[in-house]
Length: 253
Image (cartoon, rainbow, N blue to C red; front, side, top):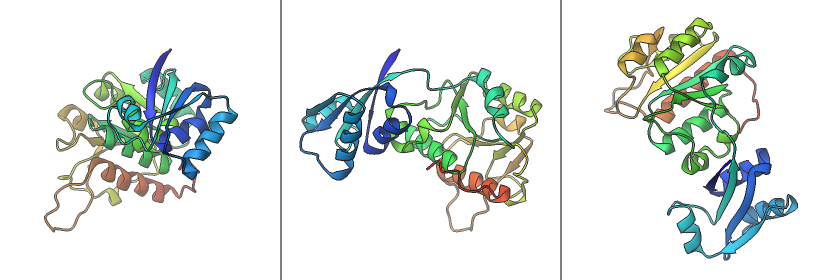
C-alpha cells in the first residue's frame, strides 16, 4: 500500500468524512488554531489519528510549496482510480448514465475543477486517458474540494476504444467542439450520455472526434471571447444535462 500527502482544509475534511481509515497522520501549523482547523483536529483526535504541530516551513516542504492552509495529511493509499474493467459495474449501478470524458486534460487544477463540477451535477464517473493527462494527486484533490473522494475517476489506456465500447453499451457520445453546427441546447441529454471535452487549447483529438455520435457547441456572444476553460465548459454541458433530466439535488457537494 502506497502513501500520499494531501493538503488543504477541504481535502483533509473530505478524507475524514469519506475515508478516515486511510489517514495515518496530520501535520498542522503551530500558529493555526482557527475554527475550521480546530474542528478537523478534534475529529481526527476522536478517530485516533496522530497530530503533529510543525512550523510553516515544514508544511511548505511537505506540500511542495503549495497553498496548504496550515494542514497536511498522510494517507495510506489503496487503489483510487478505476480502469476499463470497472465501467460495466459503474454503468449497471447508474440510471440513465451521465459520464464526463476528458480527452487529455493536463492541468491538475482543471481536472480538480472538472471533478467538482461532475460530482455537483450528479455525473456517475469521470473518464480520462491514463497517459499524457493529469491524474489524481494532492493538487487535484485540493481543488476538487472533496469530489475526488466521491465520484469515480476512471483512467483508461485507449480512450477511443473505451468510447466505442460505451457506444456498444448504449451510450450517446457527445463531443464539445466550438465549430459544431448544433448548440448543446439542441442535444437530448436524457439519453445515457458521455460528454467528451478536449484538452486545454487543443480540443478533441481526431480519433476521439471520429467516435462521437454528435458534436455540440456552447453558443457564445460575439465579444472576442473564443473559448472557455475546460472546467467551465464541462459545467455548462453537465448542468444542461441535469436540467433536462430534472434531477433533484443528490447531496454530493
